[in-house]
Length: 214
Image 1 (cartoon, rainbow, N blue to C red):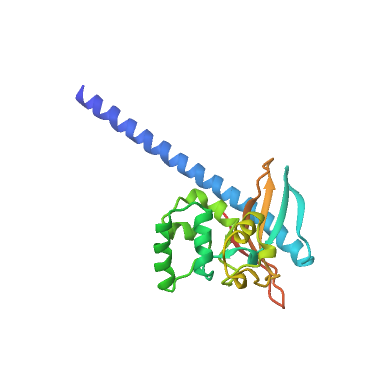
Image 2: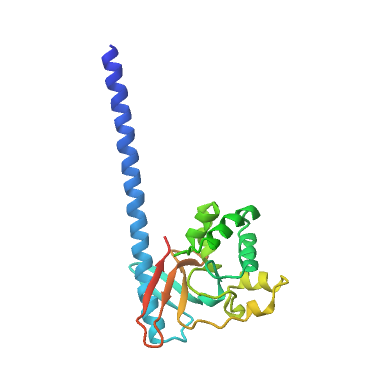
């Protein structure tokens, strides 16, 4: 009887492990499929924006999925690598993060380290990773500017910056005219989702997808 109980327990544990493994594998597969879908849209965005730099957005259908996309010059976003401390404080406040998390960021900057993508910002601050889509609509790792180009900032960020007592020189950065966050509306969603960042390769450079949001 005891042996039967042990075998039953081992079988149940084994089944749970198999189920957990399968669920993890399915989640990873879905993540890869979504990333491939985003990369496909970014490839189209890169080709279209390179062909017509004045393009502000476009509509396409990928498979059965209609997609509307638009471009935001990264100069209109807060650069988590190079932004003035006051703009980082605005970003943390806008994301409703605890002010004390800023010390983690300050240590990171003092150590001379750089972020390769916006989700790393939340990891360093110890903040909820669920905020990464919201963060990606407001921030970038690719502008290289201490300030922002207010005329190119998302409406929400521009309104916040206009309502704060910030040195005006931090709000008059020049647009990059080459690096863009691509935002999309797809699958019946009315909220723009950040797909990733592209560089159209002006001045003889080669265009590239710099980052794909996951």
